[in-house]
Length: 99
Image (cartoon, rainbow, N blue to C red; front, side, top):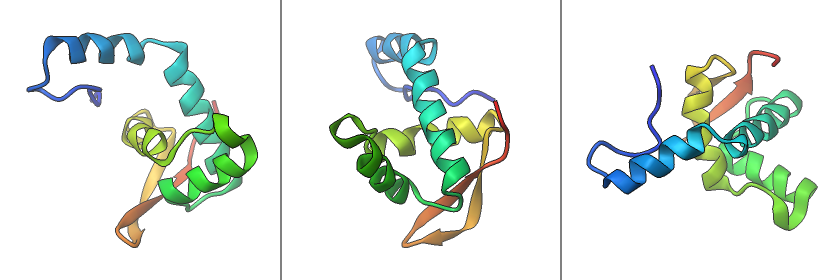
């Protein structure tokens, strides 16, 4: 199953942008950054991963929301898994596949 980047009721322009982004190097780059973070820092939330990313990459870091938006799609691809437990309402994640 594919996680759409636009909601069903979003305008066609959102679907077009989502399709373009889904087939871009930007998405692959975001996923690679997140996968690297999760290999080195497993069982972290998107907020925790963003803090690590900001410390390592400074102003060019992915923010918490960019990271959170990629996690479910990465889970569907079998790259990562989320825990059943949560930290303050957020799931923790870890890498399961080396690409």
